[in-house]
Image 1: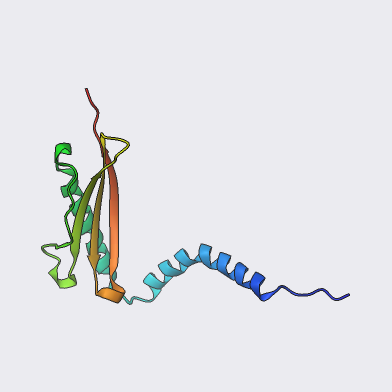
Image 2 (image 1 turned 60 degrees about the horizontal axis):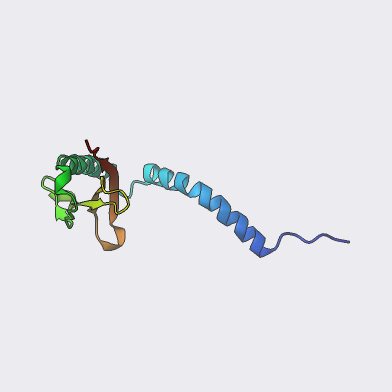
Amino acid sequence: MATQGRSLFEKLIYVGIATFFLWPFAMLWSVKAIPLVNSDTHLRASVALENLMESALERSFEASGYTEGFKALPGYEDIKLTGKIEAIPLPKFPDCLLVRAQVRWGSYPFSKTISLEYLKSRTRP
């Protein structure tokens, strides 16, 4: 009796699992090997994001619950970098605040966004 090979469905599942685990490495390789986007732009955006987060963390805890829309960041007009800060109080933990900073650049179908999140808390005396 001859054994049957794997079905098309099984082969697709194996390819899907392999792709799921290998996709981040393929994307990293493509960024380094195929410079479609200037890597200096990514570096500048990450520096701007860190600066944006630092400015958000400088605010007092009492000035919590603010949300700013995307605004153009000065000094990054050449890459049209915009930044946004959100501070959201957590309902179950009144002394905790989720601070999120995001930067975005590029045009609509090829826009890139990176973000940082920080959980800010305070202790009561």
